[in-house]
View 1: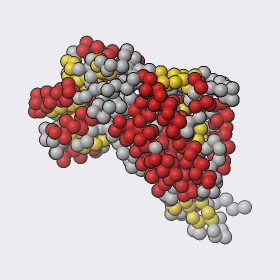
View 2 (view 1 turned 90 degrees about the vertical axis):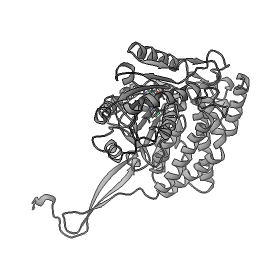
View 3 (view 1 turned 90 degrees about the horizontal axis):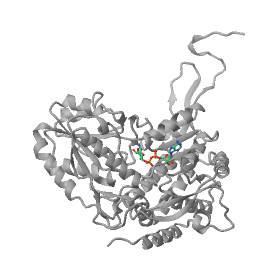
View 4 (view 1 turned 180 degrees about the vertical axis):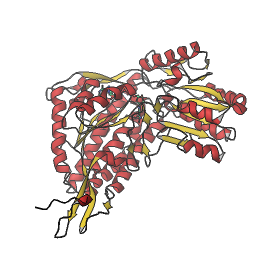
Length: 523
Ligand code: NAD
């Protein structure tokens, strides 16, 4: 039974109340004289029905500068709080998230169009990174290094950077902020977030939930300065304010490669640091010894899940000649029957595209692929019962002979280009012959192929998997990719180092002053 527009608006507003979002302050529809509009407003819409849910107030230039300045002041205090105490704030935030998981997951589904389990999964990812950050808060360590000088000690110390700017994309409206904010905050930084203009409501919800964790932290005697976590609602222009502000020494920017091309040089021009998490064009190889049942499931989730709107979505598939004719029909069957529809209904596996622009990009890519000789299955619009502004499509599979035209680009929609191969090394070359380098997989039971794929002459991506698809990373590993994907790393492993600065310290505890490299300077 499809949710009606009215019920979705009412449900959204009641969810915002549940999170404690100050609707008078943030929603233009309910603005009062206490909260004058300094910026513009933007429409928060749901791709589920295509309707506008409410209008949200954008940050103006003055407000953006105030939020960033306040975050800088907060950083000056926060950096003095011992790291394990900073971890306690993240522990409390994890608790708040646990008790709001169902509601926040629901709002993610309403605003980003993710199916229910993926909406919940995104909130679980936030909880996971909070847990990780708590442990990390006692592990922010430097090395002690052997020195060539007698009675000296050389070591490194890690210090926070300042305000970390976070720019995020629509498709992970809450988890990307959490990956960055959890690490940045335990590292001793303040954060200012510019979420996607397509998902402002989930950002307001997270902001309100984080404020609750701050209150609990303060109630326990903790120092959590006002402005430690700032939020700037708006589009590109608001993002640019964050990118250009002198009190923002690091910006972690997640989005398209086009965005990274604009943001990267701008940050470099003032010697600020960037963590760039940009577009992917991810591939998988299905080799002769693959477990085909497992490969089918892995490919189906990676290529059709989230309606192909993950940076790690599978977009290119190389299938060995010996299996091609038997495996492709099975794949087509899965494509033809996967349930597409209202993501708020448990049985749906593929929800809507985010908006009309995404639908048009999908249709244009398919037309280009057919013009380039591709044979198309699926890809048409699916009638959802929600009217003209909700864009549901059947995932598309395109059999194509070579890797050219749209195959080399990331189209943020469920399109899988399927290619045949006979020689493993040639498939590897094709695999790496695109500008992007985010995620990759091989399905094989041949240990030589598997290890070669992971080796120096194998996949050139930041993520390389064996017998699982390219999407669905967990937070313990560092996340990010090479080439036009931007080179940034977030989340687990030692990604925390990007949010800190390293000082090398040498201490002389002797009574002489030997100089390094045997240099003499006797006065
Ligand atoms: P987008 O590039 O349109 O927008 C991303 C964010 O950047 C938004 O908040 C937007 O307002 C902001 N922005 C755009 N131009 C800007 C500029 N010049 N200065 C400052 N801010 C600017 O991306 P999208 O459509 O929201 O998301 C889809 C894209 O994101 C895909 O390419 C996808 O692969 C990528 N993505 C990458 C990762 C990753 O970790 N590599 C994760 C999620 C999404």
